Image (tube, rainbow, N blue to C red; front, top):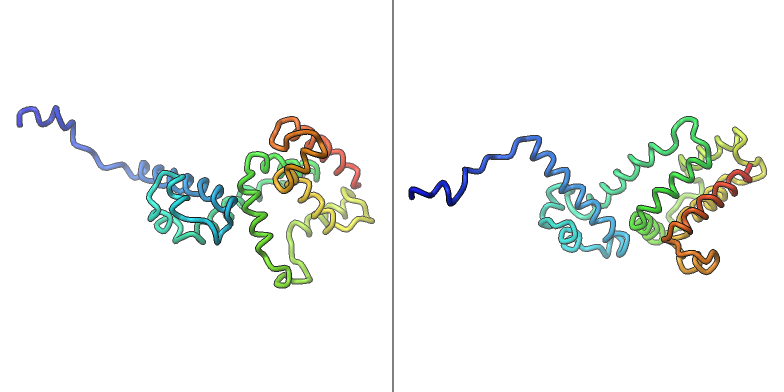
Length: 205
């Protein structure tokens, strides 16, 4: 046909390697973000890969292709979080600064917080060792040695307290609003939480 080129347009070129890499990274990121929402709502067992894929706007077969299945996708979310978390406790970071980083992150990652909470609720305490090996607790003990935490305080309970404070707006939002008068998803609640958490931590010493 004489007008074939005009009708069909120029021949399509194959994507360059860097373009394929960017597309793959975008797909992986979209699946991870979609999975956090689904896992946060239903946990690992209840989450459905077809819903995750639909939310990400991709074929569900790509979950197996990129992550090897639902468990691999879940593990990839954890790996992404651990990589981010490792940047929190840099040399010279105060305990106040460290905890506020968790609070700041949790404010924009509520589904991730729900996901971790569901994992904790599903874990059987009987299967947990009575002699905890915990890097966070070890670092908190080091901060106690440095004088950031009073010598009469148990770092394990301090850690439990700080964890509860950081996730309070997600764990018991109704109670948080009842006690503070602020919607736990609002800027007002966040600003007050940030201020009060800072003051409480300073008093731990």
